[in-house]
Length: 294
Image (cartoon, rainbow, N blue to C red; front, side, top):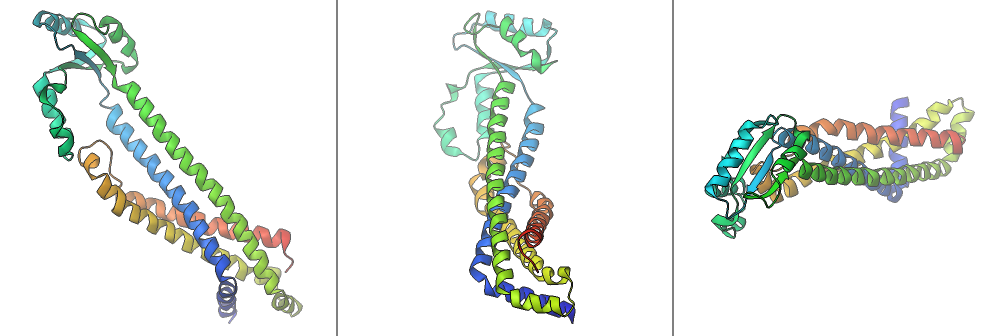
């Protein structure tokens, strides 16, 4: 009987403050959706680091007018260098073939790139990738057939710095939205308690505990948080289906960026649900203890 009464009070409270409840749910959903997006981005960054940092190479791009003698000298120096773990030579034709494979899902880019646009190069795996400046000093740009020396690690550091910034910005916006949701929850609970003050006063007069009178309000907030979490998860699913799997299909198939697996969404869904329910319930409880006398 008591359970039925509590549940009926929860339903009544949600109906009485329908507009504020909807606003609370939507604000919670946005904040939790942004939090989930930040977690997915963090997972993608981790996967990308595993993919790319294991393949970091130093590339020596050769000038268009490089001679066979210069090419041979460069190869001999690489073979003798203690800094070089291994190296491969890639001709212009081989570079163009690799380019076609990498961007096979973007035919317009391949068609607009002439076969001789990509330079021949030596791709070097270093014993210690942090010793890139040594190679750059041994093969200065613009001399002895060398066009430029490029360390892929520098580019990756800048790329991941940018991605980390996007992740941090997303989480920061999520925190702001979460604060807005908590304030909205607090105001909604105060309004609901004020509207039902006569009922709760009568319950206290007939011996109901303070916890028992507070429970319906806490459950209202928790239910709204759960609905917001479900909407957030639904938004992540739609984002994966409509944006990631379609718009980013080419780079994903080419191996440029890792896919967002369903397992990642499944793994963060409980975190989102727990955060939505937990934060809403705690906010309601603190509000009732500090601002409302029941």
